[in-house]
Image (cartoon, rainbow, N blue to C red; front, side):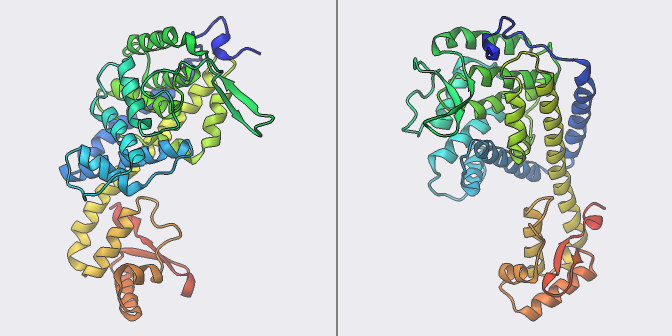
Length: 367
C-alpha cells in the first residue's frame, strides 16, 4: 500500500470541517480566558510563569523523543536568554540548544517561516551531536529514511519518508502552504495539518518531531497574534502512545479527520493545563496575601515548596518526614507547625498516623 506522500492526492489533505467547528470555537474562547487570567499576574509573576512553561515544554518535547534533560539547566538557560538573573554555571549543550529554539519560537512567533528558520532550529537542537552528519540542512543521503522498530535482523517499518532528492521541492511547497494559509484556515486545523504535513516529509536526519511541534505552536501563535504559552508537548508526553497512533493512522491516507480531531482535543487539554498553572499562580499570590503574615519561616518555606510543585502538588502528598527534611527542625516542632497550618486552614489532611498526608487547601487557595 502506498504511503501518504506517494498518493495522487498528496498533499491535498481532506477532512470534515464540521467535526472541528466546536473545537475551534472552544480554542478561541479558552484563549480569551487565558489572556484574561494572565493579565491578573504581576510583571514578575508573568516572567516566572513564562520561564516555567517554556522550560517544561522544552523538557517534554525532548522526552517524547526519549531524551531526558536537566530541568534546572533548562530554566537557567531560558532565564539567561530572557535577560533575567540566573545562577552562573556551565549549561550542557543539549539543554542550551533546545532552550534557544524554544525562546526563538516565543520571541519571533510572527516572523515568516523560512528554510533558514528551520535550519536555525535544527542547528540549535542538534549542533552538538557528533553522530548527526547533516546539521542545519535537509537530508541528502540516498538511503531510505524509515521509522522502524523491532529487531535489527527483522525490523518493522512504520513509515518511510520521501526520498532526499524530492526534499527541495517538497519543502518549498510546504513553506509556501504555511505562509499562504496564515489567514485562510482556523487555528487548530492549520496547526494540526502543519504538524502532520511536516513530519510526513521528515526533511531532517533527526529532530523532525521536535521541530514539527514547534511549527504547530508557531501556527497557533500566528493565529492569536501573540506567543502561545501552551502545554502542548507536556500533554502529548502524558500519552505518547495515542500521539504516535494518531500519526500512524494517517501515514497511508490524506484524509486526516481522525488526526485533526485528536490534535485539536490535545491542544484544548493543553490549554486547560496552562490555564491551571496561571490560576494557580494567582491563587498563590492571594494565599500569601491572606495568610503570609501569619506563617513562621519554616511554614513559609514548606508552603512555597508545595506551590512550586504546581497544581498537582507533591506526588502522594506532603508527609511529616517531608516537612522535617525541608525545614531541618525537630519532630515536635514539625508537629506543632503542621497542626497550626491545619488550624489556619492552609492545609488539609488525609489519612492517619504514618499514612497522614497534607495538601494545600484548595478551598482557601481558590477563594
